[in-house]
Length: 384
Image 1 (tube, helix red, strand yellow):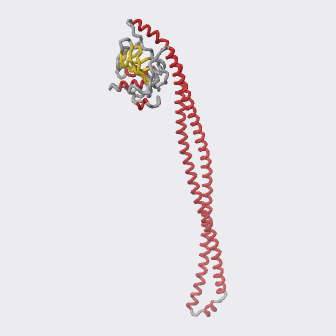
Image 2 (cartoon, helix red, strand yellow; image 1 turned 180 degrees about the vertical axis):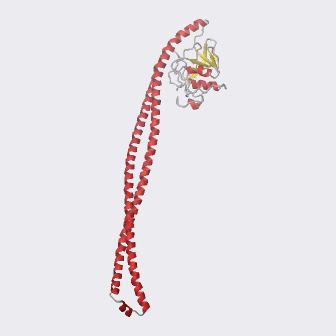
Image 3 (tube, helix red, strand yellow; image 1 turned 120 degrees about the horizontal axis):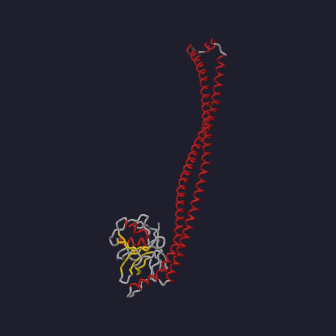
């Protein structure tokens, strides 16, 4: 939560001999401004708080959608990778099928060539069959030659039978392998179509989710613009109020009082300091100022609005009261969040000299440093 204070600062007390008269005059001079300042604070702070809440919600929605879009994109990438791998397998299967087609063609040619060769062998055997055994014996050079012819005839008959069986078996195997490969290709194509459908659906989800994320980001940008506009209006109203009631504490600066440059030079409310407070806020400056003197300042952890400081610090045994003391932190209960100031000195005229951040009474904008004197009355002081 932002620890923003929109408290205008009262004019320096008028030194008179009568403390009672001085207090009465000071109260009469400052009361209209405090009331007007509080009205301005409530009027704008509540609107800013509401817009900031909406902006934070939109940021959360955009962030969640961004994560979802990332997860959906990862799933889409997986589907695309699976489809690519499946296409590679299909290409391999198609290459295998083409090779089988070539093998089948080659085998058929081999069958044709073998049949031609076997035709010649059959013809020779037919010629040999037309010769009687006596004539074959008579034509043989000897008994051994006759026996060789008989064995050759028997061998060729067996070879013919085996060759035909082997070729037909090979052809059957090749055709079965081709059919199996075609079935595999068919299944792979079906899987590819299914993956393609899932991929298209996933891509649509990614696109829709990213579109929703962009819409929320646009809303965040819109709310940021509205907040800046309200802050500008608030600053102008506070400056007008300061002029109307003749308040002049001098021009503040973006950095001052020794406040660390890493926080002072950054855009307001963009860095959380060592005590859980946003930079260039009144509470961040006050916490740093106390800590810079070597004193303990607790981590506020979400309970660091100025008007929460007395109760928050009390839990750590840090006392508070209504008596101003140099080195204490003065808390003014005003607006939504209150305002914190570091007490530099306690003056004899009923005023205190303070330094602070983010009161905008000079009308130059929020998140600036000031050093001035003001009434000590009506404040709660925390004694670190």
